[in-house]
Image (cartoon, rainbow, N blue to C red; front, side):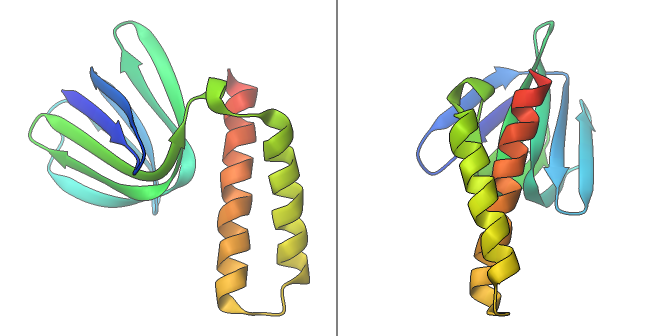
Length: 131
């Protein structure tokens, strides 16, 4: 099946694959060839897929995925491979987001923004640990 991973600024992956896991909003989703058609919201997490005999991983940050016939389309707000992640920047972003969450006065918008930044930074660091 075809796999496509896109963000607003780039195309990260266009390949054939036999298996994909995605960080769905309701939990991890595993997709094999012949999977039923569906659309799911994505959370921040690690996506994995097989490219030939090699297992590859990306940090995916929110978005939507669609499985239709023999194609998986992943439209992510942000997505990055481990070689695109700066560990020190991710650690700094995690610390800043954690502080912002603890200092939050309950303003829903600022809380959601800090929580999203915290998830993104933690996902980046988790991907770096797995490589």
